[in-house]
Image (cartoon, rainbow, N blue to C red; front, side, top):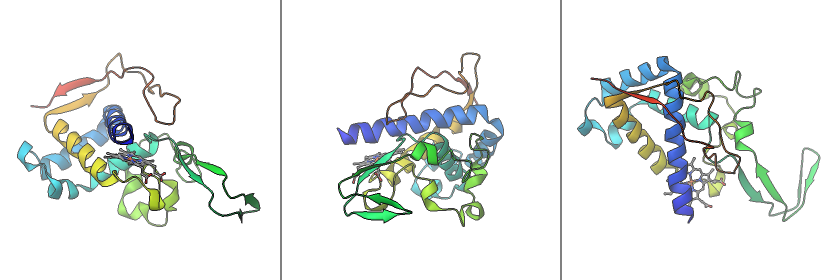
Length: 198
Ligand code: HEM
C-alpha cells in the first residue's frame, strides 16, 4: 500500500503543482524550456545523464516541492527522554514535523508564496539550514524513493515541455485548492491550457 500511495500520489501531486506553477510563472517556464532545448531537445535525448545536467530543472522541481510538499508532515517517535530548548520530550512521545509550515515560514523563506526557483541556485543553498526543506523527510527514514521520484518527475516534465507549454485558462483556480489530509491531495480537479509548441 505504501508503494502505491507514497509512490504514485506524491509524484502525481508534484507534476500537478509543477505544471500549475509553470503556467502561472511564464518567465520561469521560458527559462526551463530554453534549458531543455539546449540540453535535451528531442525524445531520445531524455536520459539520466542529460537530466542530471539541467540545473534550472532541479531548481524548479525543488521550489515546487517547497511550496507544495506532497507529504505535508513527517512523524517520529521519541526513542529516549531528552530536553530540547527547555522542552522535555518523553520517550515514546509522537512528534509531528510540520513540513508544509516550515517550508512557508518567512523566517527561512522570504516572500514564501512567491515561486522563485532562484532560491535553489548553488550559491543560495549555501548557509541555509537543511532542515528548512523537507519534502522527502530527513535522516535514516528519509524517503527511499527520492532519487527515483525526482528522476521520474523530471523526465515527465522534460518530455512534456519538449512539445507543449502550460498556460492558465479562464477555468484555472488561482491559487489552487488543496485538500486537508496528510498527503497534499487535490480538493477538486485542476484545469490548465496545454498549447503545442511547434
Ligand atoms: C515526489 C515524490 C515523493 C515524495 C515527495 C515523497 C515523500 C516522502 C516522505 C516525506 C516520506 C517520510 C520521510 C520521513 O519520515 O523522514 C517518505 C517515505 C517513504 N517513501 Fe516517499 N516520496 C515520494 C516518492 C516515493 C516513491 C516513488 C516511492 C517508491 C517507489 C516512495 C516510497 C517511500 C517509502 C517506502 C517510504 C517509507 C520509508 C521508511 O519509513 O523508511 N516514495 N516519502
